[in-house]
Image (cartoon, rainbow, N blue to C red):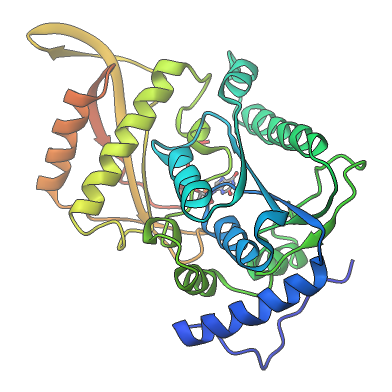
Length: 327
Ligand code: XMP
């Protein structure tokens, strides 16, 4: 299929005025393309799908059906924020599917990283397709494809993951309103559409979610330690001015235990690894020099507030040799 090309004359969207012009133009184009038909969108809460949702709500309101699948591997507060912003504030037609039990059931005892990723990806498509089949009269599928996705698929860097996996009986026409935009432009448009800053300037988060930060076979208690320690790290980075400065930061809880002392008693518990990196394109990355006192404070909070943890380690490894994620 012939992919869209960004015209050389297209101005970079850097200001609220340019974003507003883009939004007006897209709203008119979407109304023309869609008419009175219905559109389906998988809304992850990431920047791209959130901006597409907000654009479509503006253009066609209740003709958009958003499906938010919680695979049980989201960060603390994420599904709640998607529901608050889109259902409560933007009045979107939102189907929320809590598929936690289903995903964790399928992942139980699976330790191979690639198998874990395949299970999460495959199950996601299945849950989404099941929801789509329950809905009547959907003719369009909206996607948060952005320009780098098109460029990278052309250059053979990564397969254009969009749609590929949906069952053929779900024969939708595509709606991709931000496919000619770069990430920074998507953010400017999102801000102009009134999305909250913590959604618009969100750090990257992998599709398989916390699953790749709970190395080996995922257990509920270790997954909870990842989620809680990540929430503390994000809170402290936000409070101390690092949230907008550091490209990506998160915690990992490896599957081994070591001896420690908690409340005067011997403990045998997991370590939490903190990772904070900077990069332009995620192909290489350097490690953030987090102030020592802040790391001490974060350590103190994690070991006292997160169940099953007695140590905190900092990952000093750039990419290469390490990748950013652990699986
Ligand atoms: P690595 O670990 O390869 O990560 O150095 C590079 C960047 O890609 C993100 N990442 C993913 N994003 N789906 C995504 O949408 C994935 O399966 C995935 N795996 C890694 C990672 O968080 C980092 O920003």
